[in-house]
Image (cartoon, rainbow, N blue to C red; front, side, top):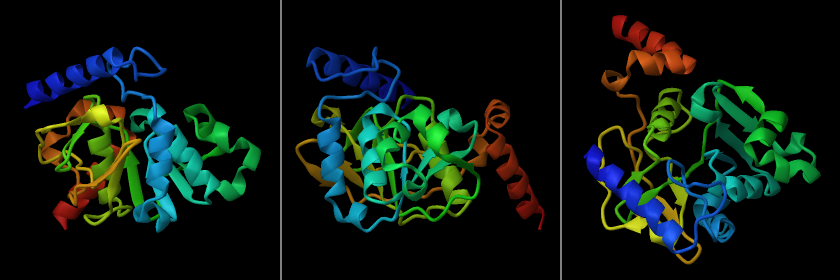
Length: 239
C-alpha cells in the first residue's frame, strides 16, 4: 500500500509539471503542489453550503490553500492553522484582531505567525480544509507522505475540536483526481473535493482519533502535543 501511494504521488507531481499547471514553490515534488487555478478552486469552495455555514475553519498551511485562508479572514471566519510539522501546536487567526489591509499577509505562513496566536485549546471546528497530492471520488486522499495531516486529524479528534461528522474539504486541480487511492485506518478521508471547474461530494466521513500503536518515540520527541496526549491517554487507561 505504501508503494502504491508513492507511485500515485510521483505520477501526479510529474503530470502537473508536464501539463504546465504546477506553480511556485518548486520543485513540487515532495510538496502539496500549488497549481494554476488554486484561487478559483478556493472561490468555488466559498460558494458551498459547508463553507457558508462554518464560522470556524481549520485550513492547512500549504501554498494552494493560501487563498482559502484569505477568504476565511475576509468573510469574518476564525481561521485555525497547524504550525509546520505540528511542532508549535496551532495558530488562531481572528479577523477582528487583524487589520483588513493585513489579511493577505496573514494568510501566509510567516504572516500567520506574526498576526496569529499560538493556542492549544482549539475551538470547535465547523470545516477542515486540507491540501492533497491526489484524491479519488470515494473520498480517498494521499498527502506528501509524512503523515502530518492524518496525525493532525487524529489530534483534533482527541482534543474534541472535531468529530466523525466534521466535513473535510480539499481544493485540488482536476488532474489530481485519480481512479483510486488506497486507504489505511489512520488516513483522513475527504468529504468535499473542489477543483476550479467542479465540486464532488464523496459523502465520506472519518474517525478522527490517534492510533497509539502507530505512534513511535521519534514522533513523540518531535511533537510535544503528542507527548501530552499520550499522558492523558495513559491516565484514562489507568482509570
